[in-house]
Amino acid sequence: MTGINTPSARHRRRTGRLDWIWFVPFFGFTLLFLVIPTIGLIIGSLTGGHPRVTLKYLAQLSQPQFLDAYRTSIALSAATALGAGLVGILLAWAAIGGGLPKALRPLLMTFSGVASNFAGIPLAFAFTASLGPVGMITVLLQQATGYNLYHHGFSLFNFWGLAITYLYFQIPLMVLLITPALETLGRWSEAAASLGASRWQYWTRVALPILRIPLAGALLVLFGNSFGAYATAYALTSGMINLIPILIGQEMTGNVLFSPGLGDALAVGMVVVMSVVFGLYLLMNRKGGRWAQ
Image 1: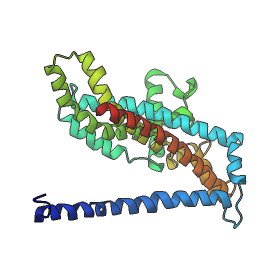
Image 2: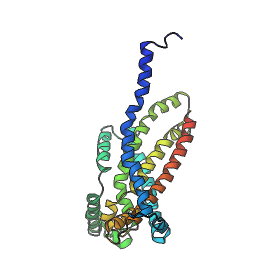
Image 3: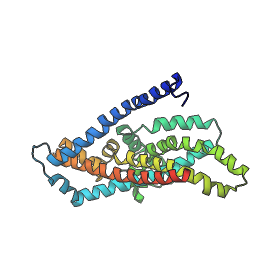
């Protein structure tokens, strides 16, 4: 019992009680920019700005055009997340553990930090000027080889053209997200080699299990980053692709129709999709935590 009421013990107890204070800014930010807006969306989807509660806006989500928009948005987000995930992890590994010169790593990380935030109207214009029907790359390729991309089925303004455009900011974002996880593999590689593990055993039994959770988290961020993108898709395709963010913009601004309640309901559907994806990530994270223990 000696030492329980010493000054150092009392200081540790006071410090333990005050630890929660450091979480106040985080909880406040979450409340202001996540919880309250989500509650507002739910209320708007149930009222449409009127005093009476109605389910007609949520019921409209079962209409074919809205279901198709969800399918298209999910497919676009999944395709760009997987494509950017594969290319991004290869680039990051080449810069960290591959044969690329070390001088290229700062350049790669700097470019990734800039390109991951380059989106919207400037990105749409840049790709139109490069890969549009009279874009620089399109014209140079036709002059050099006689091959016209648009005469052979390519279009920058359809699903796959938009996916290629999204990869411009998705790949650098993947590099930024996965690089810290790859940097931790060095000590694991040395430990596995000292214990006599082959390269195959190292990757299948050590590296991949360790990277599973960070990789899943990075893919989740990429999915959400693409799922909620609006300006790039609208500026590039003029709203011709049936995507949920574009439909929300049309309903909220009155460009085609004006129904704030339906716009809120569409946004609630996006919240549900992201909640399901995040739930799958938490389930995987729990299993990964058990493996790590």
